[in-house]
Image (tube, rainbow, N blue to C red; front, top):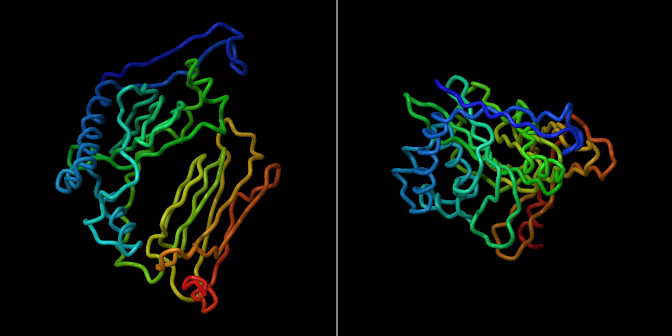
Length: 301
């Protein structure tokens, strides 16, 4: 497969921290990019037009199960609420492809630019990473990661100047491993969510040995697949500093129980928190109890 290798050079001293004035290489497979973007455009169009059949056709098998699991874990109907999302999937128009490559039956496309989720306001440049899986000879949409660079302003400046060293990390390359299809869950006894604030870090979590989560340089929450259950619940996590970080950023990992009663605030049942300049564990584990005391709080008592 023909590949276009983009190599950029800068004059020594234009950007701090660059050895011998060379900007790192980034690989863009133009033919692969065209195929992947056809899939993404069709998937995005299905989301916007709420077309379930088209969505199912262009979405990888493991992702379809994962999405269904998330919806039923919030005690919602599937596919009825599939398209009830708060933002519009971003268009690729106007974004610059920095790295597009495949390995085995997996592919990754990395874009840089003003990524528009349709929420308005001033949009700074950030990274969008779209992954794909090849099924029966066709590329299917797998996942999209939005990497906010507000806490990595030096990285943003380097990318704007053409220094692609940051996206040459292994984390931005396909690994050739097709994601395993998750176990299908029927629902949840109690709705729970994980919340992570991890500037400059990657955090991986697992709740009750079923619900897997991965966060990169972000502040966001995700529903716990299979929910929480009465009694003891388990939490495991790992952390890793990303290139461009100081390794001393603050970190917060939490689990909340969600009340079914309107107006009742989520109940925090687990927390691992480290302030800026603190020492962050590379691995950690813990648990939380869902008992009568927690259930009373969820009922607003």
